[in-house]
Length: 451
Image 1: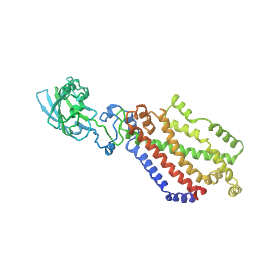
Image 2: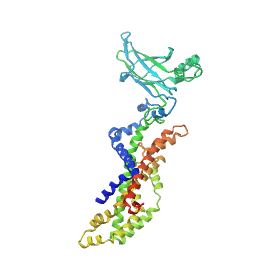
Image 3: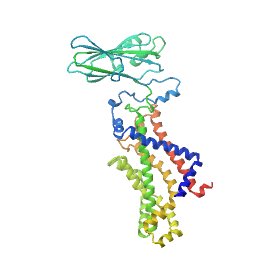
Image 4: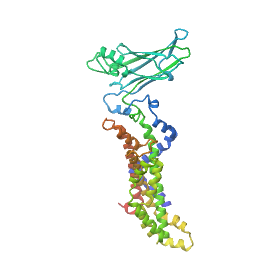
């Protein structure tokens, strides 16, 4: 054990290994913090939720950090929610049963492009008679636009671009068919140009019952949103990127650890006991080596279950009796003939003691580098299953992100971030374990140490 500890201390001599350890440490830290900050049930609820959860997010928006590399500043999402105290809500009683509720939303628009969508959400409480809502839009140049009216239900939304009367009025006055562009257009410039400056939206709601009330949320959607962007369902991709980390680490580390230790133990037992047990292990390994793992996983995922834990169990079961058993067996055959093994038999050591105290520790320097370099293979396998549509339908993972992006034409539509973000994380994970594994192999293998 002291030799192993001393060998690990030598890893500081390899800068690539230190970089790899740093990256692995960050991935493990994220894997620990993510389930605490976003519990499992909450992550599943968010990822499977519809527009009711992600209504205030834009659709297919790039990450906000893309603005750092652009000459033109893309619009970010602007949200005003009266339940959060936004809008300067004022109430005026007009009669015994009628009230006027007014909201004023002011914001400074300094972006170089138009927002893709403007929506007003209304949550009203009433018994029989619905409130009536009217909106006025004020531009920085002083123009006043009657932006529309509607009678909301308990939970309603008003999409400015879908109001035909507003579209006709704006087309007559500006010649622009797109409502969102017409509301932000600078009439003083030729062509369609964004008018920057302070905007104001006034929302007036008439309540016709004494106990009625209404809350308004105004959203000017952006072309960029959040640290990771959004997908076609308005979901924040950071949820899947964060939760994909513990899933990838758990899948890769558990599969590599259980497979390596179990395989080594079986090989050691076969060599020590020999006879029919060793022959059975070798024949089973040979049969298992010609069985294709991926088609079996595809078949199970198609006809039975796509649970990630079932897939993990199958991967471990088929990987235990892999070719590595023959490699371990070749080493154990040499270790078995060493003098200290004969000494252990002479003083009456039990079979289990000889296997686990004398045989296995002898080849730990071979096991550790191999275990570390095996992890990326299992991480990529989990992602590959998800890309093929056989990933866990509940959990958000890196592979699921890539599969969703591919299914919705992310590359064709220019949403490169959707695929690049999980792909880069997969490459970082693979590179980190590979750098550490190669350094450990160089440390533990005396022949490579001299190179």
